[in-house]
Length: 73
Image (cartoon, rainbow, N blue to C red; front, side, top):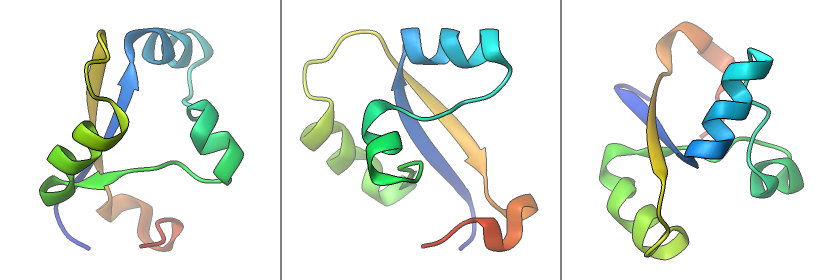
């Protein structure tokens, strides 16, 4: 896996993460037991399928390389 990955979240979720000093995932992430991320070529589909017409979204870029095997693809 090379290049950045992306996390779409709400402004509220980002504000909560900033106040806690860590991101614990969305309700869907916590339910599924992992943080859902998208590659650049998946991003449009992710937005269309899961976030259509939802206001207040934020796009976070995650650099995967420093995390090594912590990422499962």
